[in-house]
Length: 254
Image: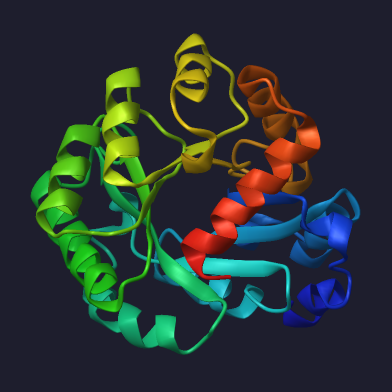
């Protein structure tokens, strides 16, 4: 499968760096290389593929190659009980591939992962927060019905950088996240709440994602997210796409 991803090498051109997908799951595609190639052809220059457990994180290590695909690895809430022993190996894995640019997706979940004890979730999350803080790398946060707890934990550990994937919070939470210097990732789902948040916060803390193929069809679908952000912020499509891409590059040291 790695050879398929190599198809992306050399395809990154100036106009191709305009759009970025801050969160997708390339390991879930039947042909990740095809998804990457199509996205680049549609102007998506950067894709960040995320792990959710040890198996998917190992695939992320394989897929995060070339100038277009980067990855974050970690043990998410769903896998907190089954993969907790793997947490202490995250640091070494992160250092093994320069295209692994953060720890994620990690966090707390009282909705989808409701069968996983919250004490276990919290212990696994806090350990990964400690690793991210010690290495000064961004966290990619998964939070469902737990945003206050998540904000409290990362504040306590003085985490400098965090991206709230598929942001679940209110307008008040968004302003708090903005003040803390964290990023809000906008998914391809429209709602009145999300529109108000996009309007309320600064463009420089907004990034775009597809969460594909779970939500969006592919990383190429990020253009529709950027279109909506541009419309709500009163910007041109190109300006919005470029600002978001620069934010991702700066935040993740790409």
